[in-house]
Length: 497
Image: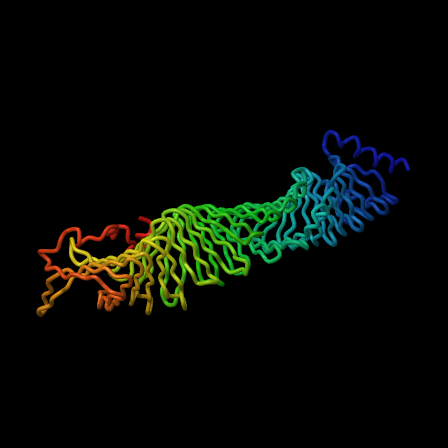
């Protein structure tokens, strides 16, 4: 009894000066030199204390170098907040590092970590596993799994890597590296990451997600994918509860269902309304039967109609280019359900050598190509004959008929007027021999190979043919003539001019 009491007291006296392990309790206590010289064998209800941490187990060997081998119902408690359990323990007292194996469980007030192998640094309050582990967040309901993990108990922060998975009934996250704070429920990603929220997928390479408030910020090639649409950018903000997503820098929206994409510098996506807008060098790209339409405006909007077809609205400085059709206007509206394009605000359209103006305009599409062009008032068609002369047709209303994407016939109605130059060809030479000036209620122009082929006057025409040199100046230029060729987008790059 005296020897046992002395053995229990001596380590206690050394604790303050040398930091030795202190024995608080053991049902049986002997010395086992066969295990290692100076080893104390502790069996039954063993309790040990070191540096403020209390360790429980069924049995243990305490060596002179302050290392411990313990077995059965290992339970380490540090302060009032942290508890670590396992089947076996190897403890290095001088380094204050505990290695636990077999059914390891680490608990703090908000979470539980389970693994088969854990190294816990009591001094640094740092736990690490390398053979796979699972975290359950009792507050948020998240379950996290990874191959490698570290827990910083002072910060309540988990650091996961290699095949990281966060599962919740409302979301799933897959990442290469993830930091998770149990106090706030915030997850930070470092590496390729995928987040699945119902029918919405989010991809990024860096960012954060507040799992409790459901607010996220992403960077490094961030993308939101939903119902055949993809919103991407250099950085992206998404609030799930409001369904609002914003993107900045190299923003792109791809609609695989309607085979179109939109690009710009800033985008805003309204998930609940299924709509978005793009600004900053905004560009719409739409595939159209073997051709592509490129369109630029200050702001591009996309929203659904009552039947969930798409409506595209382009505002301010609209310019578009297609191989056989180009145009400019202030506002453009595309109704996918009706295959109809509305142009408003001083619109101009070019097809071949013809420039068409008036307000407002409508273009109907068929099989992805222009089918009909309608001008409701102040219709004007002009094509350049030479540097100063122009063929012109003007009237109240205009209907243009397309074939294979090009205007083949134009019908002008209501107070129609025309200026048409007669051309004489001799060999390879062409010369202008006269000017045909006519007024008529209806004028029909046919076009072949991008040139006027014929002009037909309907309903009592009033026409005069002038020799070129004798044509009155006021008869050569109709009121309202404005040759606007400098505004014509000649290729994709020029829509930004």
